[in-house]
Length: 305
Image (cartoon, rainbow, N blue to C red; front, side, top):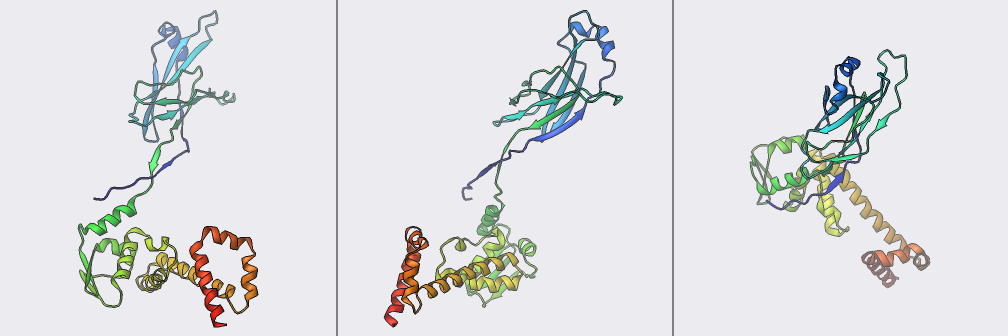
């Protein structure tokens, strides 16, 4: 199998999850002695955010002082998953919510963004509870390589169950892929004398990969000829995308030919005027092959005159 090249894109959007943690009997826990055991927590809530498991723990420790109604309620975010070689970045945002609805929710308190690698990692504690916002990190995702894999499948002939005989050349393919891409029905063996093998090969590769590599090159007579034949084949097999690609490619070729014909026409003044423009100067720098084609056409018309 050929070596695959991967490109990576960065998913920059944060993934947010909002949860409500309900705490009952907090004052009773304080009076029962939890205020002296600050390392203990009595409520935990486990969430799954963006494919990672998280746990939020509540520590109902009491603030030393004369007021029994003053609490230092702490929340801690625990990462339970495995990040592998990629950091998972997250933070925790919390606010108090009045169960009766008489009071407005308190202002949000948020931790600093923290990177997690192991389950033992955790964020800093907060002094407020109850709504938690957990953000999944930006994780690099490889771009789709399905077309490359299907192209390799076409080249390997693995699992092929249909054969096309085109002008004494054979092409192996897969009926299911052909059926998914084209409404044209196929039998186990198909013979065709109406198409050149090079054209059929390009057609088959497009069916598997959705691209025509020849169209990425500069327009040449051979490319224009291929586009003409593929246009006929695309219309026959119901490949609308390929048909549009061929029409666009051929339109560009015809437009270029008309422009060259206009510039190098009967009047020398037209060519002289074009040569004075900034566009012509850019053409000299960026497209020497097109410039050469233009000069050859102008020279030919000059000899005729």
